[in-house]
Length: 449
Ligand code: GLU
Image 1 (cartoon, rainbow, N blue to C red):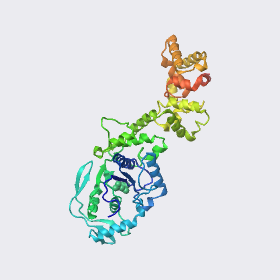
Image 2: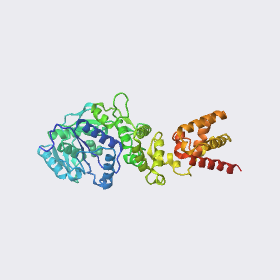
Image 3: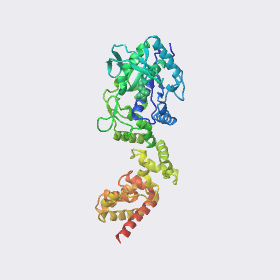
Image 4: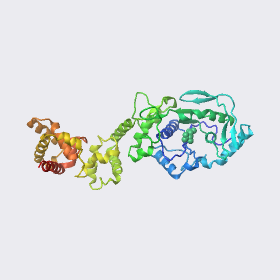
């Protein structure tokens, strides 16, 4: 008996074939395996199915390992980690496959024909015990090749051999593999080993239509989320919902709670649909929930080489980020969202400009506001006193507070949206506010002449 057979501990594996990218569907398979292992206190094994040597480059592995670590999917056995069933690369397990192949020859389940090795099917229907779909019965009618004439072993064979040798108790994988499972069950029977339990998880469809997410679809690759500064905890939480859901329509849950709730039987039979809007929304929720220190840290790394954060004091940087935290949904757009806090020259949204400054009213409001704040001591240039100031100004002029807020915000930032107006004023400070408003009005005077 090989090490690992007949163990009562739950042992699951993620068995990717390196492709050069980490697809969202693979990541979700890895995640569900990891969740189940952590739920049961079992082991999560990473096995690299790299019999296709051309694709097995260092770079493919790097993308995969980094993506998994980024998502927090730590493995208990596998590359970099080792374990009792090493090696964890199929390309290094040739001797094991040879040994298992000889067993099949001895028991009469394998034979040679035309240079290849064939597996002799039983002719009886195979029962696939699937935790999600119940028992699926399939008849494998034809013998199939397990070692090609060039000597390379076929996926079905090595996949089953490794699941046996590594003592895998549950095979959790994409539904696209359901059609392979009858071959696999036949192989387990031939080795006189009970097949593991299966859980074939639903596919992930594109946002629109009935097609499966392909690597070319926006949002399909984990490395893109890393590059785009998404929070890994948000991406992971979103991936959990692609095919699984906690009761009571809850969506945002700490991972510890997901682990304790996660059951294979609760995975949906229906395909899941990818929705980047929802993911971005969740990302925003996660950003807002971060303690401000952590948020500021993430912002600093997200702005990285943009040069935006370099020229200002730590205190100013922190204040800016603290007011952005309430509104931002994605750190990818942070530079654009808050760039004007760091530079006096910034782009103006042309369309909004035309709309806001059709007549002279808005310019007059800016001028009135500018005059009104002059009497305000710089030290008291704060949220509440500014709110009062704008309130009484509007009242005395018989206009709405919005008539001040919109053009002034625009003149200060070039945008119609951003952090709360009074926070914006306070963080920029009196001096910058006055300077920018004067420059803005000056620009108009020159244009009009
Ligand atoms: N290497 C296969 C894949 O990437 C593994 C399938 C399985 O999990 O059994 O699809």
